[in-house]
Image (cartoon, rainbow, N blue to C red; front, side):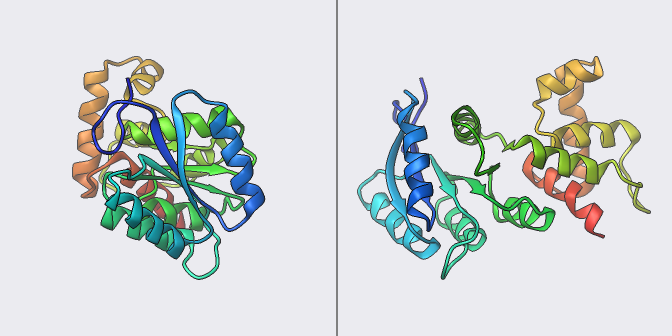
Length: 222
């Protein structure tokens, strides 16, 4: 049984923020095809989204996940994501955009996004990203995961203190793999993977897998 943002049982609550009505209509249609996701509100911009989320909070109906466009008039999706996470840390944000540039991916993840999808994603990808975000995981579109992974697999930066195995684990994190999947791929136990992840976060001064993925992308921007 999934739980809502208020801790009660039931469907995952989803909020849409996109300035194009036709995109909102398409995403709304996606959500109607799933049994465990329910749409509770929409907004046409970042500022509008914050206002509507505040109203939902007053009604005790905050969403579990916001599907957020990046390019919107007034307040863009990156700033809106940053403010959503600052005001409502328990609300997760999944970016749904037409832009896959590394700089935008890094900025969105750094702002607190727990997922990054392209607008050509199918209904299963959208649903998977929403469920993953609600479960505290980071879900990236395959092309975005490859972008981050490829940036990490470039030349090793000077002064990098990570071991070769830690870099390998970090590359898989950037690819969106879970600890269980990494363990199978590297033929080690999940406990070993968790130890590597803890070591990676400690060495890099980070606190989450999402931050680790952001770090991986930033190393290529150097």
